[in-house]
Image 1 (cartoon, rainbow, N blue to C red):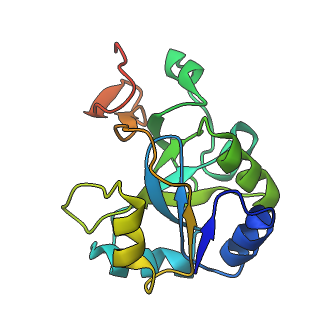
Image 2: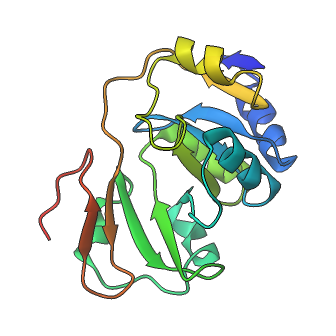
Image 3: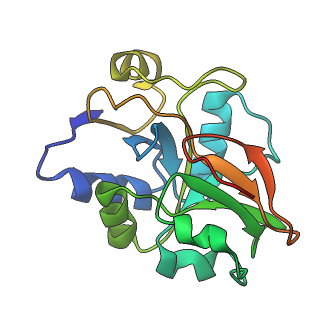
Length: 183
C-alpha cells in the first residue's frame, strides 16, 4: 500500500502498521528507509535487502528513548550533533553495540513519540547497491514486498548519515556522510 505524505491519517496508519510487526518505507532527514520495530520485521528487511544475518541495523530514537538501547551515554561532544544526520555506535543493551541516530525530522519524531519506542532503519536498496532515491523506483521495486510506503515525493539530494564508533571510548570514523565532523 502506498500512502501520500499529506494524508491526515498517515501517522495513525503508519503507527498501527509498525506496532503490528509491519515493514514500511518512510522518508527521513537523509534518505528513504526501510523501517520496523525490532523483531519479526527485522528478518523481513534482511530478506528484502538480501542482507546476511548478524549485521545490526541502525536504530532511530528520541533522546528520551536512548536508555532502551544503550546502558550509558558517553561524555562526548558528538552528542551535541543530535538531532541530526549522525549515527553513533554505542555500547548496546541487547547487542554488544548499537548504531543509533536521533533524527532531525519532525515527522519521524512524531512517529517515535506515537509508538513509544525506537525503530529500525536502513536505506532502501539491495545489499551492496546504492540507496534508491526515486520514490517511483522505490514503489515499483518494493511495493509488493513491504506493508506500507509513505510517498513524500522526491527528497532533496542528501548523503546518508555520518557514522562514528565511540563504543570503545576513542571516536573512530566509519563512514563520512552528510555531516562533516572533526574528531
